[in-house]
Amino acid sequence: MKPFVVQRGSARRRQSEKPRPRSGVRVWREFELIDLIRRTAAGRGRGDCLGIGDDASAHLPEAGFLELVTADALVEGVHWDFAWCDAYTLGRKTAAVNLSDIAAMGGMPRRAHLVLALPPIAPLVQVTDFVRGLVAELKIHGARLVGGDTNVSPGPMLVSLTLQGVVPKSEMLCRRGARPGDRLMVTGDLGSAGAGLWALQHSRRPQRLRTYPVRRWRRPIPRLAEGRFLARSGRVHALMDLSDGLAGDLRRLCAASGVGARVQAGQLPLAPSTRRSAAARKRLPWLLALQGGEDYELLFAASPADVPVLANGLRRLGTPCTCVGEVLPAARGLSLVLPSGEIVPLPPGWEHNQTEGA
Ligand code: ADP
Ligand code: MG
Image 1: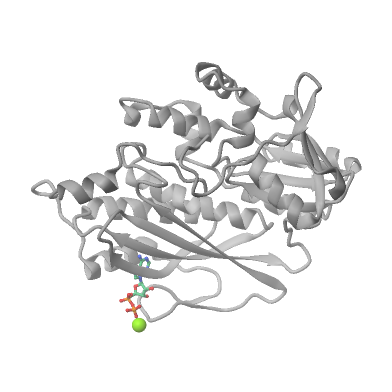
Image 2: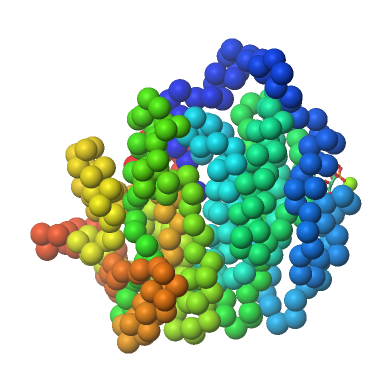
């Protein structure tokens, strides 16, 4: 997931000013919080023997399925600021970005473990709202919270979710497998979440923003049904989700597959509000689509002959998809066809440890 750098960082503020909770605000205590989490997460899941309350969770393996395990950590002041999304929404987002990784393998999510590192003064209601959002999002997609760990952080809040899922042995889709001649397809639109993040960072009243790009940043929708459809179809050669922007993520897919690719800038799917955001910032709209992160859309490679069937199936799920380019032999490298027809090297994606986001 693509982090950002907070200018008015809450983490820094916390360290330098040593804030105290407002009077009347209850701060969390470990056993009370774990008990609340256990009650929020309650409910039986398929094949689960033990959930929260013992030294480890336990579940029955599912015959004929591969186990998928993915983890994502989010750090306050790096990935979010409570001025930009409330705790419940952050909980949903934390689950959604992990669920997206299961979708990207063609899998079905099952159960999650949550690690919390909380500042000692974090209000109890903020933490429980976060857990409520997380559990709600997991539930929508058929997964449960079955364990985790709770700790104190001397700095910012950190949340880390480990999500386990399954995929039928013969259906798993990976980043490797794309072949020269394949079409490169993406679901939904690109660059809008990045535009939303920019709007939040540059607004005086970010809490009030309700635009489409901001909604896309706050509430990513994991493409689980789409991932399952693509995996079941048997027609997809490679699949991944887009968390760091198409330019960077396509590089990873091509490296894993040992291929090159050519992207058509003029075909990148852009929402009208993303175009407006680009115009306001004097940025090229297709650059936002290539470098804006946190889209959580799916990128897949398939033979041209299979594309209409796949596109129709996705449309029936309510999700548009767009051809954004084609796979080439490795020797052809990675290139971008500009709207003018000029061919240039594919611009770099966003790099971790960079100080400025898209
Ligand atoms: P231990 O000390 O043996 O690791 P803990 O006292 O830390 O156990 O945790 C007690 C139970 O609560 C365990 O089942 C653990 O998985 C669960 N748990 C602790 N923190 C969380 C959390 N943040 N989210 C979900 N479950 C948690
Ligand atoms: Mg123990």
